[in-house]
Length: 169
Length: 197
View 1: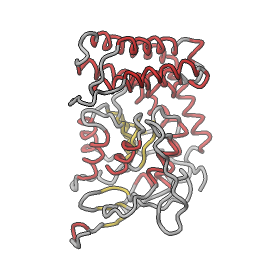
View 2 (view 1 turned 60 degrees about the horizontal axis):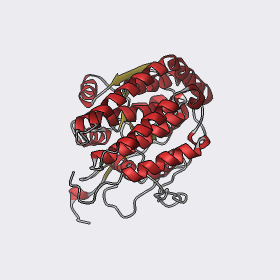
View 3 (view 1 turned 180 degrees about the vertical axis):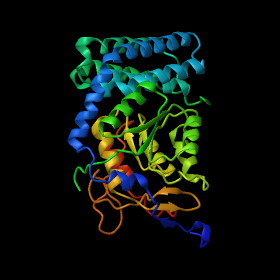
View 4 (view 1 turned 120 degrees about the vertical axis):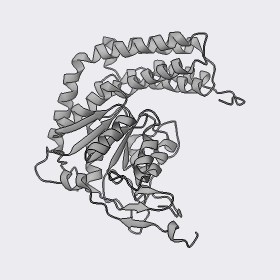
């Protein structure tokens, strides 16, 4: 290691208002805070179905624009973004299967962005799975409860996410 | 201290997330925790406008924040020596929990990463961890941010590498993503023999 002043570490404690204030007495006790937060989430559920439908529609639109134009990066980005939104929110709102399928589809779309071919069938089966996952019988179940479906989607994802070695994208 | 109570009242919390619905959820969770000053932005330009106009006490930032992502943004905040918010706690929210992403987040200067989708519990416990496990800042030619070699006494289960620390347990790379416990461990695990930590 060079014996140069600029390579030496300066160690200091910064005045941190968050640490000072967050440790004050009088905060909401953890269990109560978690309960309150869950209540806020429950309130949001009233319009979650509408949001989910809108996001699904945006995903389908972006996917349809990809057909025949697998190198359409803006559409691919929009599809990935919608899919990521579904992933990020699904399980928090109690739709674990939506998060699982969206995560799998995100990986396929990420591979396409990296140069993997556009496999319409693979994408369509994930869209179908998302449509199923948001319906009443499936929205309350976890991925572990439908092992055939989850392992099948994983396998499809693995098969179509292979990026050609000579791809320079 | 096990399960400490975090008092978020009057703390200014900035939530930066491109997903409007996710921002609503995070805002709602924080208000459930007792926060009463939660601000939201959807991209980096708005974030810097807020940072330049008022004091923020903690930043919760999605790793996909446009245009360059939360890791780049964290690096920018930490590396700008003239930025008065340089030492604010930064909690990154990430749906990509690959080990390399988590390591990059740590090396960018994030205090901790919480995996998306979030639960109230996962967020609360990491806010408590930031509040009750203060760390010194390290300023070197190649890194500015919270000490990455910190000793930890309890939650979230990870440990450092200093004398007296417990055994390090970093998750093995078994898949594309890490569980939240593994993320915590990776954050608290020290890197050996590095001059910049």
